[in-house]
Image 1 (tube, rainbow, N blue to C red):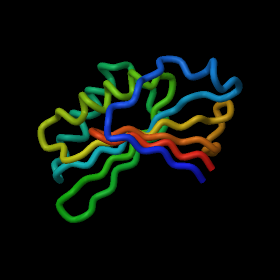
Image 2: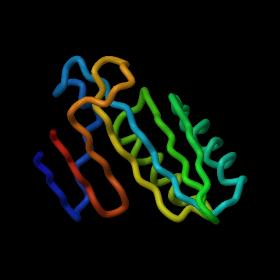
Image 3: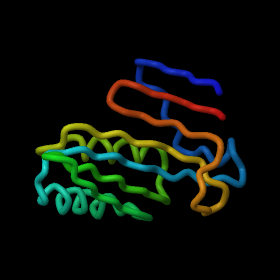
Image 4: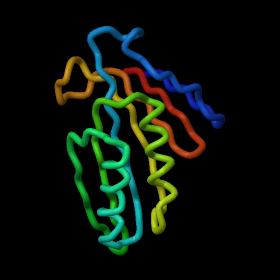
Length: 127
């Protein structure tokens, strides 16, 4: 397994499909916030405003913290990064992270390449 890390902001490619034919790019946004049910509806409004396609949305509570895992499709890497930045700016949000997944077709199973971006770290993992 190879791992590349960089503290600098990575270059964002708007269309990865030209590099990986047969794969589509989906995104998983991890949103950690204080336990405030209003944050869920606020996040939903942000997603609706971005016309994001939500494939799956899971919410878990651990103590005084809510963790939302939102799987998105039909958007570019740049759109997903901008969406993460908008969600990170919401009142009560403690942390956000977005993972970009290359998926063969529209299958649910994750394929071999995953990379994630957060506030100051980028990671590419190739298995």
